[in-house]
Amino acid sequence: MVSGQIEKQEILHDGFSHGQLCDDRERLLLENRFKHLFVRDERFNRKVVSFQGNKQQLVHRWIKYRESFSSVLVETLLEDFNLAPGGIVLDPFAGSATTLLVGKMCGINATGIEILPNCHLAWQAKSKFAEYDLAELKEIYGRLLLSTPGVASKPFPHSAITEFAFPPEAENAIMWYTDWFANLPVSENAKLLARLIQTSILEDVSYTKKDGAFLRWDYRSEKQRRLNNARLVQGKKPSRSMDKGPLPSVLDALVHAFSKAISDIGLLQAHYTRNGSAHQELIRGSTLEILPVMPENKFSAVITSPPYLNRYDYTRTYALELAYLGCGDELKTLRQSLLSSTVESRSKNSRLENYYRSIGQEARYSEILSVINQIPVLDEINSAMKVRWDRGDLNNKGVLTMVDQYFSELAFVFAEIYRTTRSGAHIAFVNDNVRYGGEIIPVDTITTCMAEAIGFEPEKIIVLDQKKGNSNQQMSRYGRTGLRKCITVWKRP
Image 1 (cartoon, rainbow, N blue to C red):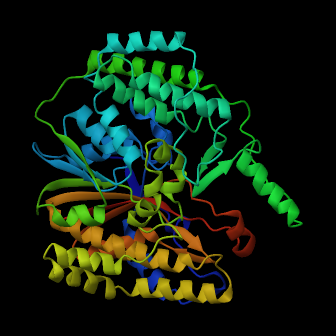
Image 2 (image 1 turned 180 degrees about the vertical axis):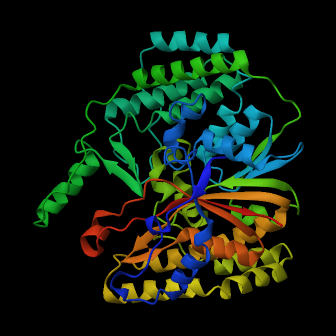
Image 3 (image 1 turned 90 degrees about the vertical axis):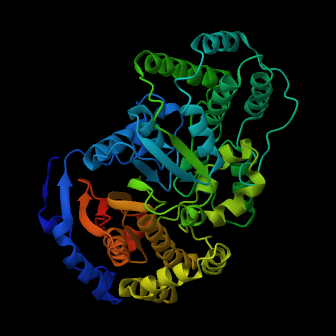
């Protein structure tokens, strides 16, 4: 491994509160306490820790999951962690299942936990790359090339978020091809792949684009037109709209995606060596509820990236995919079950307490809670958020609950990871530092402090070369400040 110490002035902060308005002594103490852990590693960069690293990777590229990390990251960390035969790697925020898919390709046992249905579809279809009948897929592709969409038998199952997302002809074609694929006399594996491919093209043929916490809308969409007409009636200027340019037809998008999948499957099947002894599984549900009922000392390593503390709402970002899969009515429930990282998140304190009581673990709940209450930097952060809200420096009071709950919930995740991992296990977390209302929240050192309080031994904090920027709103009010993006690595003693 090529790594080394950093010139600390490059990445260390000498203050965390703009204008020194709020107390930041605890954050500074952590900065000094863990500064010896900061290292560079030339193998890791922003492309490797994002979906960009998977855009050209076989099978991984079948869907665009922006919050994922790359297969290269997982392969590199697994090599570093040197799992013994029979070891199991855990990804408690599995997303598009990159960790599991790497495990399958490398013959390594892997377990993932994920709540979003679109991610489960992705894993089910991608994990069968060695089982597909290539001749059957090529026959389907040939039929697809000759097809012409007729009139769909049912409308797109929109949620309130997704209405008017498609041109009418595209929406009709999406649903016509949904029936067309479902009625083909082909294997269930082929239909599963077709389902994923249909889901994967929705953004491409729509008037929307995933953009952080929400969907951006093209100026041609009926939703954007209605919004701007309402603004004009109120005497306001029309909002700035996106122009996606020419949209591909549904057929063209399907043909392109199907061709890519067939090519990947052919290449992998020619070189893939089956390992029947290795097992991978993706468990459906919230990590906050799945981990507490898992057995002790089960996992040999953890590689994951939890939702960042950046207000991104996956139920909005993936609203098209979730609606298409029939989950439109579940969005609010899903939103409140995710790790608290949006301003719409509500406190899970009572829910967690009741859950631990229901599984007969009230004492464990109280023990974890006592650890949280003894970490002074969390009180400092929450107090600073309250001051900033009272001053009008925050545009949404939900930021206060989000920040408080984010670290509280992560503490429960860390404690359960400690309980379920074996002695000597390594844990790697990818995360971003953030800034709200002029207050820098060093997620890397705070989570490392929390992990240490739970019992882990912090080993290093790998800092990526390029510093994360700030939002335009933050820069205009508080100036530009470099924010670290890191991979924190801890060890279970």
